[in-house]
Amino acid sequence: MSDLVNVKIDGRPYQFEKGTTILKACKSIGIEIPTLCYLEGIAEEGSCGVCVVEVKGSRTLQRSCITEVTEGMEIITNSPVVREARKTNIELALAHHDITCPTCVRDDNCELQTLARRLGVKEVPFDKIGSFYEKDLGGPVIRDPSKCVYCRRCVSVCENIQNVNALTVAKRGIKTYIGAPFDLRLVDSPCVNCGQCIMNCPTGALSERDDTDKVWEALSDTEKYVVVSTAPAIRASLGELFGLPAGTFVRGKVARALRLLGFKKIFDTNFTADLTIVEEAHELIERVKNNGVLPMTTSCCPGWIKYLEEYYPEFIPNVSSCKSPQQMMGAIVKTYFAEKMGIPKEKIFHVSIMPCTAKKYEADRPEIDASGVKDVDAVLTTREIARMIKEAGIDFVNLDDSDYDLPLGEYSGAATIFGATGGVMEAALRTAYEMLTGETLEAVDFVEVRGLEGIKVSDVNIDGVNIRVAVANSLGSASKLLEKVKAHEENVHFIEVMACPGGCIGGGGQPIPTNDEIRLKRIQALYKDDSERKIRKSHENPYIKQLYEEYLGEVGGPKAHHLLHTHYTPRSPWEALEKVSLNK
Ligand code: SF4
Ligand code: SF4
Ligand code: SF4
Image 1 (tube, rainbow, N blue to C red):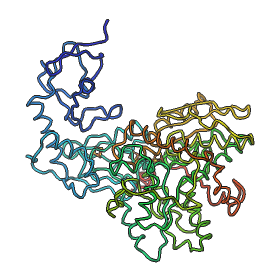
Image 2: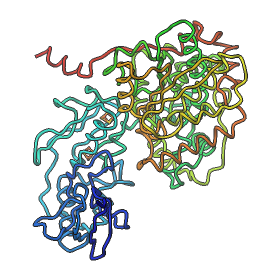
Image 3: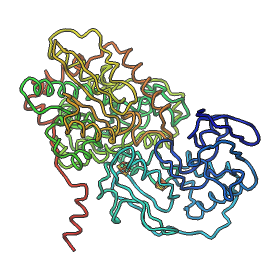
Image 4: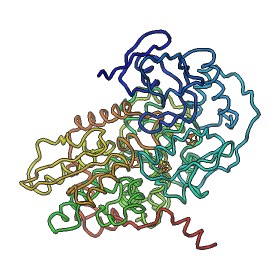
């Protein structure tokens, strides 16, 4: 029996695989049906009704994202009735929507605005229905219900990709509410601040907390010495916000733009990615040699850390105690750098530019500061620094390159791939191999841990010892992997977890849109940088060696431990609710 069905679309005959939705069938022949709520593989519930088409013989219009083609089906994608229905659905969405485009954070890439234009909406012929709910402020992820179009993409992403379930749909009709359950603020919910809901929201209903004013204020304060450090992933993505193709490597332009903004020193978080690897590889080897707790997992992703504390607290002893590169940079800037420069740490204001919304949360964790003052004073996402560069009138695309400042601006190829899923694992293996064997590792490319699969498992032979490693790409994948480890179905020594699909190149603070095609381009840019670096192993970074010699002492020693390591706390995902209940 044939698996193909014969279908007519707009009068022309086609054949498609059985089970294909009308939406996908049309896309494959070059007809792009508009959608508002649809996200392939993530949100396919057909809630917005924008993708309707006519199907001959059906009394009502059909939602193309959930209707499959069948033998003999005749579909009309562009009739007056179809166009009118699509337009009406967008007009209804706009009736609920607070149309304040010039002040909206998504004005330059709003899907609602694009659809309204595409479908010829010229006015909203319905009475305005205001929002019934307040803005949800307080944490790194901000919700503005007045801009919500109830597409439910955020709910699907949080549930299906991240397995966090911090968002839900409550109430009905014009009072529909999308937010954390039990009227909690997101900051009091199990939300891990990964920002993946922001990345998939079609409007400005979800965004990061804007910390740019705080940084402008510091830059104009003559009493402050303002320094900045930039994460591995942003060098492969920031250019997109200025119209450059995805994956354009813009490290030199980033440094120049930051100097023009007035930062006194430009440091590279890649430097402390190298430092993280040195400490983490040392910790792994100690655990392997001394029958320590295994599998060890990475700790550089704050989205993963909060998820672990809430949903897998039994794995806390497995997590490396190393701080993330952001927080290691913070500690080193406010101690080593401050002392070397003779600047009181209280005068230094340290800004961190990250692809990540969870890093805003991490910088505020009470246990994280090691210098006696706040180690990281402000965290800006890729999108926020782009806004500052634009506000300053800097012609980013035509900037010449500048370099970063030494010693905290030097890095190895291993550090730069931290931004991609599998990169931390590969970087750690390069260093762990040489620490364990004392021999030079010639073939540094561990290609088996690269790529966008959800879970990658691989065996690596180091000096006759088999080390089994696993990489989890997203929290949903991490959860699946940990369940297997718990059930003794997977026996691994070392696990990398990054919360965001693709790793930090797909982080919640990155340019919108981000999809797999764009993720791969950003990843390629990082691996190219790695392959072109003279030094490709973290422990060979000469300024890392100097830091240990001049200041930290032994790798994993007391001073390194004080400044570069931290601890984690089990917490209930619903602890805020429990507090509320107790007070009743
Ligand atoms: S930030 Fe992440 S965890 Fe929080 S609601 Fe959004 S998707 Fe869910
Ligand atoms: S917050 Fe955004 S993604 Fe979530 S339902 Fe509203 S419009 Fe859709
Ligand atoms: S994967 Fe990267 S961007 Fe995403 S939450 Fe973790 S550290 Fe942040």
